[in-house]
Length: 281
Image 1: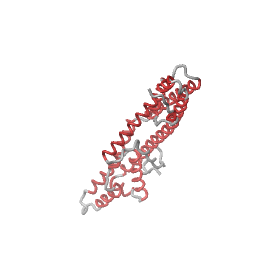
Image 2: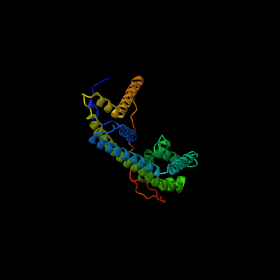
Image 3: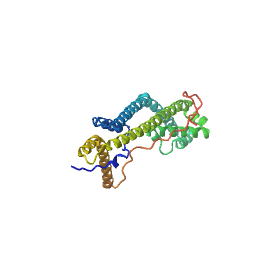
Image 4: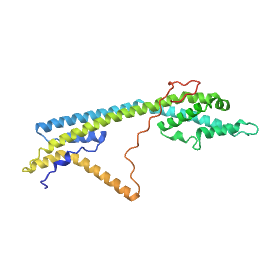
């Protein structure tokens, strides 16, 4: 049996997220030695409290994320998709008329290119924040180039009226989702740091129970800290596997998480659109 014990590995905070941090903390609490010294017992109590706070934060995050009905979001997204799709189809249909008989047909084709470019409606498949930004830029261009009278004459006023109604509501939806996600992410980061700190404090005090002249204390401490060792070993295996996968493919490993989406520009209109076309400012 190895009679050496390296306490230095327990002064480094483990790499955790909110979910596995709560799990690790609870495992360490469950493995706390019986009849532990007072300082260890006190650190264990604080670790348990940190785990409970983490569980509450995780539950609150799920509750907040669920407050915005995904069905409602999808319905609004389909309405926005249909609104911009309908305008483009209307202009495309007009552009297909013979230009010698209908001179505005050529202009309708130019507007299709000017508003939607070569990519057409492909932006409607992007994530909500990206879609919102592109839609707002189209409306902003219409306003700045004073194209609304011309588009109304070609397509009918109903199309831009509908876009003016749906876009502010879409912007509010995107902004609400981003703000909630930012708030919960910030809160969870604070909770994760608290769990890390509690784990280090507890593990350091448990490691202090070792008496090199009494091998039984080494084994007791190892049993108490085994969940932390297992967590680090699992992380090391995952990192090693990612490195091997990168070497085998010759490509860098995928990032652990996507970059946070850029918040769309603030909306200058209310939740209800009117006859006058308006875009988020």
